[in-house]
View 1 (cartoon, rainbow, N blue to C red):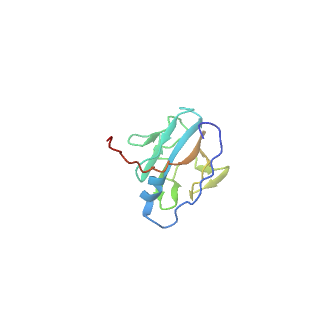
View 2 (view 1 turned 120 degrees about the vertical axis):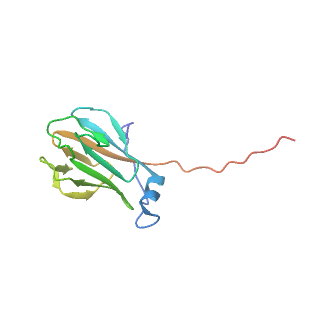
View 3 (view 1 turned 90 degrees about the horizontal axis):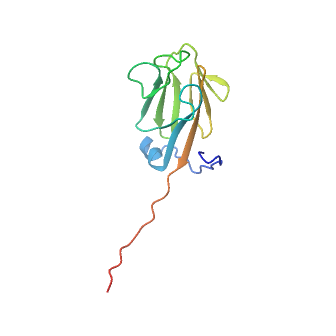
Length: 135
């Protein structure tokens, strides 16, 4: 998505191999579109990512409209899901207020006055290689 091209993600995992199977096949990130840190990309790793402006969060969003612990991203078998943590200003995904929802490539998340975009890219498949001995 950094190059402005749309990606077609095929064969998302559904119930096979657990959350780490998704993480092994896809690279997921959040890009800040507006607000403090605009243009910054946050690579998603692990199984839980806490977003907010308080101490101890994984993704710090330094804006007064953001709660200390605003939202959590959870890696599930089918990809990342976002859940509101009881924040004051809530969460919108693609303009709709949500409590919790799975994310799809290109989704726009609004937390307070900060807008982010969720991007997934398929990791390149490893190509087997062989070493040949010179005679």
